[in-house]
Image 1: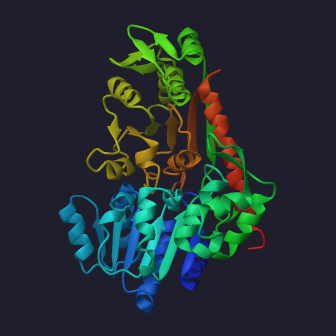
Image 2 (image 1 turned 45 degrees about the vertical axis):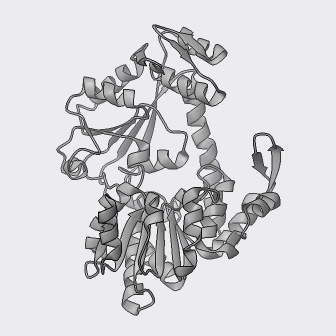
Image 3 (image 1 turned 90 degrees about the horizontal axis):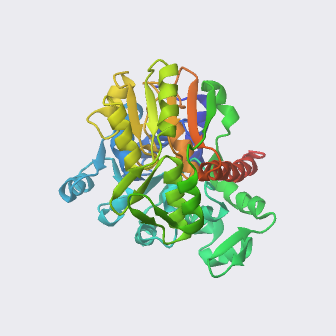
Length: 429
């Protein structure tokens, strides 16, 4: 296996910096880059043993397999599973131990290098896992972070991510950071907005610690991505408008939303044609599934990934397409990449990071979309990544004049901020 030139440059950046971050879009090969740099650090004796923190599925389905390709001479242990299995991996003689973020409390053993895969998992410095991790950070001489976007949900996210790499980047206190770069617009709800030029100032602070892989440097290596917005009308808007105005809906059961956040969730369900009530889900219309059927039919049943957000959506996919498989099915990733699965259903939170699904198909359909830009882009990136040889077709089914349109617009608002941050970091690289 051989890295591409831009990947060699990124690996060299990591090797040259004890504290560093790689900002690279989906599919750019962050795992291969990092394993290459980790291997050189082990060979040179700068690191005796590595710990990797990653989302659970990335631990089990990515790091072990990528390790075989990029550092076969070093042993990798996956510390996931039962307490006994995690302990055995931690206590082993493996050169690299990989575990998921939920197991931070179980970290044991001697490590002097740490890699944070999907660094955005540590964006909240007030979170329990962050506080536990912070107490043990001094033992790691080398700290590297990997991310697709620091600012997937706003500039505020960057503080925690930078703090675990080095407190010198943006300081020690989240409060001081907020006071310096933001202004409070609603103290009751803790709402803040960046001050003018804050993005420029923050990115200049981050830049010396970060290798930025600009999309233009690798985009020509990937086939085109076509995002197709599939608009559909709701046959009967009465239930939607009632819930929107009154927070209460009378169907065969009384469905109530106690808060604005809860009603937002109910509205997304109704835009999809159903709603959860105290007695279970209730379907009102199957308009999105009609569109889904048309997409699958027009693509001649080509292998397709269907993205869902609610369990009831998954249940309906299963009812309509019994051949459907989920990512949790035995050997699902391997069978998908062999072309043996016609319909693969995935949830953004369980399959939004790290999985290589580019060899089994080139079509993806969002029945409903997540609020998180990071999850949205990462999910598409399961197909649109290095190794994909065909144009990727992404269909997003949106219900007209509903919260679907607001969510989709919100993603692109956040994307604008993420792109500005990327431009600033990449300037004069």
